[in-house]
Amino acid sequence: MASSETLTSQGYIKHHLTNLTFGNHPEHGLIFASSAEEATEMGFWAVHVDTIFFSILLGGLFLWLFKKVADKATAGEPGGTQNFVEWIVDFVEDNVRGSFSGKNPLIAPLALTIFVWVFLMNLMDLFPVDLIPYMFQALASLFGMDPRHVFLKIVPTTDPNTTFGMSLMVFILVVYYSFKMKGVGGFLGELTLQPFGKWGLPANLMLEGINLLSKPVSLALRLFGNLYAGEMIFILIALMYGDTVITSLGGGLLQLGWAIFHILVITLQAFIFMVLTIVYLDMAHQQYH
Image (cartoon, rainbow, N blue to C red):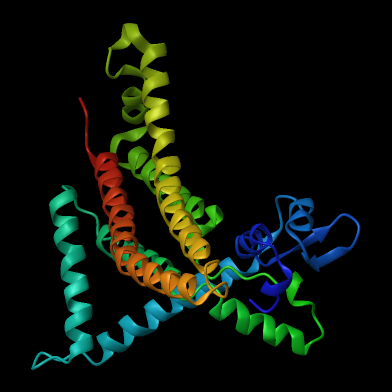
């Protein structure tokens, strides 16, 4: 980063883990936060500009690519891009057919969107940790801004706001289809009468309520925790650069090894988020008697 030589290791890590935050500060009004403490003082309604920007950018990239392939799709000999997109679509459809027993035209498009979008957001973790933030800081310096006060996190899934936002939308769909498919009585009966029958109503409600509410929490924390830990490891490896030739070479080898392993992590986490969404919605469509 542009000012790494003035920072301690702790400051370097803290800088990389701070979002570009815009909000209403109690003393300074609407501003971009110049420190993590200032971002905290902005309160709940502060906006993580970098998270929103990269999320929308990657979502737009997904829509543009798939629409472009769909518009140019041919029944003859397909090109490499069409083959790749068709493989992803077939992969998602196979998982939907294997995990979803009901009939709902929303499930497959939703699963496809979740898998590709989450994968693309996770994929940003493979960019060198200083590359894009350094470019952003250099641009900010042209406008007279102090690089030490310019933050940028490029991996949206390392922000719990992203993972909880997606998981809460899945939770809303689960509750909606639970009411739609089972009716109010069926859904409430499922929460209050299982697994111990009507005489165990308090215990049933507690167990089933915890089971229901744990779905969005576990869905969000699993994705956030794995990507946050992966990003932290990349940052720690980056601290090895610039000390000695040996530590720099060691850091390069470690970063390459972790990046190769992390390809599996980012793909697996996108897959898990997609599959659990399908399973939760399948449970919402099932009738219990």
